Image (cartoon, rainbow, N blue to C red):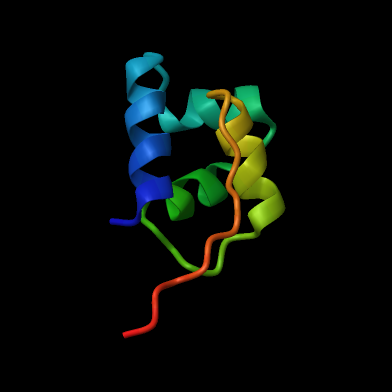
Length: 67
């Protein structure tokens, strides 16, 4: 699982929210929340940041190290 997916899922559970409740409170769709928590790579970054903002966080770009 990717770090953002892990963070959102853990934070949502710590807040005592179901996926449905989180979707309603954040204004995001339930399908998006499920895809995000499953680590789907094609989710929209603007929506990812909406989800992260619910927990006081944002996604920032980072360069990958060359192999």
